[in-house]
Length: 110
Length: 113
Image (cartoon, rainbow over all chains, first blue to last red; front, side, top):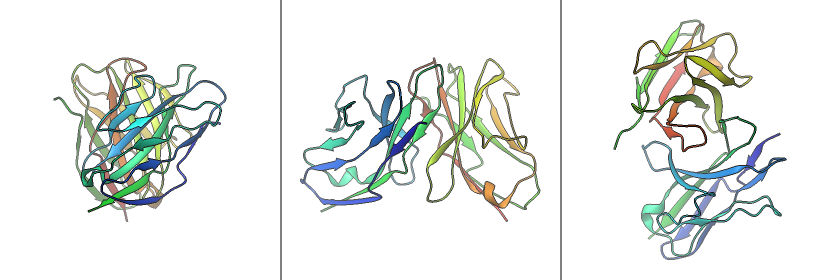
């Protein structure tokens, strides 16, 4: 079964502090992993996908197949990073469905 | 930048009534999806649609649900006889090709009384 776990419902850090949002997944094959972000009153938008290996808005995420994790990191958090972050998985075998975690609400305090 | 749009933004209905949620995907996209998020829970996949056919559906997507692309631009989700537990935020998404990024609409918040 495909499952995504985000263990932290809420995460609060101060501006300039490092931040790590945890994501673990369960999937028997080689999944594709994503981070989506939802700012207040806005739509879900893609932040990162693991195959592109990009750094967006200072965020990075590395797929660790051994630990089945895809944690999202940023070395210096900004107030504008405050948002809801969702980790998602897309499996192989022709399925296009995204399986989401419950999300982590990040608050960056001044 | 083109965006997926959804109407209405909010809908309140009585239990047992039919509702139609509307989506306009990005114009050159070919694959369409519906997801829902019950308050406090995960975003859940409902259905994917390509070439005027359902390509995949979840166990949530039972006979009460149907999807349609009635014209070249709209993609609709119909719930035939709403239940209290259908209250949720419903998101539409679209992609240009398989294995590409899914772009989400802003959602329709459905409240069934």
